[in-house]
Amino acid sequence: MNKPHLTFQPMEITRPASPRESTARQRRKNLVIVRAGRNSLHAGWTAGTGEAEFDLLVAAYEELTSGASDQWSVLLPGRKIAGYNELFQRYPELLDRYEYIALIDDDIKATKQDINRLFQIGAAYCLDLFQPALSWDSHFSYAATLAIHKFRLRFTNTVEMMCPVFRAKYLRVALPLFSLGYETGIDLVWTRLNDDPWFRYAIVDEVVVTHTRVIGTTMKQQGFAPNESYDRQVESVLKRFAAEFRGFVTYAGIDKHDRLISSRYLIGLHSLATWTAWRRTPVPLTYFVRLVTDYTRHCFVRPTNLHRIPIAENAPRSSAIRTDC
Image (cartoon, rainbow, N blue to C red; front, side, top):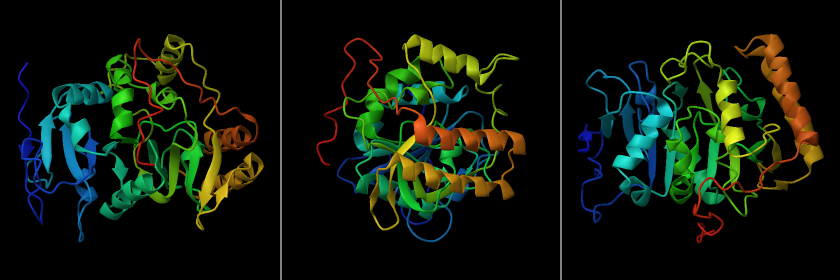
């Protein structure tokens, strides 16, 4: 199959190098990819003054209106994860070109400065996979993802698929998961591909973004059958890999003074800050209470569950992918 053309649309400041241009041209080391629809918020990610320290690739699942200031765009109709998989199958050079690759949903409200800082922190702390924290007025699935302002970042056993940022070498290891046909659940496995997983995955509390859409409202676009729940696919993923997921756990953190907090007891106490979000949350209160209660309990008592899961025969082992940290 021929590759579709990656359409270049000029940015305000300078023309960036496209995937087809000479490697001699000065290039950014970070890439943001969005599976975008007509109501996408991605135009705000590059708006305003200052330079973006990342390239933006719009992998649209429907035709977009013209005039957006995106660096590259390609039309890939269909489901989100399937679209990401197709993109990397057609353009594997993206994994070599960039050091970090973010896959950000199109309903995330963020600024250029937010995304710049997110990449900076990931590189500074040698993370393999991480995500920004969510503002307290966000729709959320896990209370662990709500911002706790005591921390710069918290180390975790899970990074959800709403806005993950991968070290490109680690994304190469995780990509077989994208080809399995699941649209949810693989985020419970993609932190389990490492022989040495500690302090490699994190929620970055210093960078706070807003998830603006109600959870589950795009299930039809993601290929879910009528009356099919997310839980069914999650159960299928875990069964396929004989894996267990007992909860989203943050087991250590770096505070704003760059001090490591490794006591699970202290982490659990700090998790109580998420209760304050009840004043601003759009989530129904009874559901909110259950989610934040679960998170605090998990901090205190749940195992981190980070032992490695082989996802394929002869799958690359990721313990040696980081030679620069």
